[in-house]
Image 1 (tube, rainbow, N blue to C red):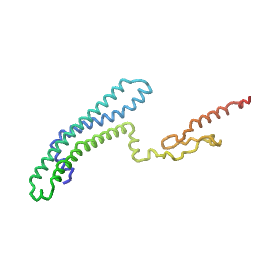
Image 2 (image 1 turned 45 degrees about the vertical axis):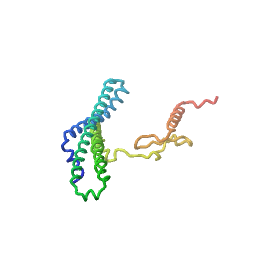
Image 3 (image 1 turned 180 degrees about the vertical axis):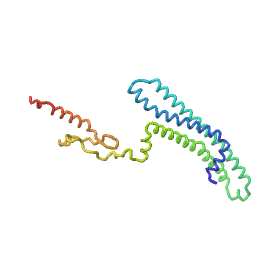
Image 4 (image 1 turned 135 degrees about the vertical axis):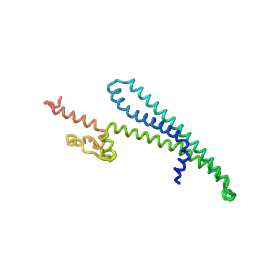
Length: 228
């Protein structure tokens, strides 16, 4: 039999607590997705329009409260299920060990038997109460983030895993040349812009654009520079 199925068989009597832990994990995922959704109101309403400050602030507190309650109860219930599973597993293993023959105890030392009862079963408790709980909780949070992404832009959510929505550009890769008026003069700084993400790969871009604006203003003036 698969070891995972055997482990789930010991957890079957506590499926009610496991279901309650799943509900708490769903609350944790909803709180995480709610916090991600609040980024847009913070930027658009609070920082730009200077409004809805109290509403957004209370919403952030409520989202963190929901996330904290979900995290606490999911961790508590999963730890409780893990401890009960380990208790039943140790009792079953102890009864099975007592029923062995004298040759079994002669072939194995006392340290080996104690290690089976303490260390190995302790690892099972860690898997049930910590690893499995974190995996399920964060997986539900990822589902909430994916649902939020589909809510904002379903087309982007479908295209992005294909890898054709954007093209990664290495940080050290040279971009296209600067405008022709900057390239005409030797020694003029160049600004390289990556087409994939729109990032600027050149610190002299401000000076380059400043010189270009200055030359445009100078060419628009009917008079030349003053010679004193």
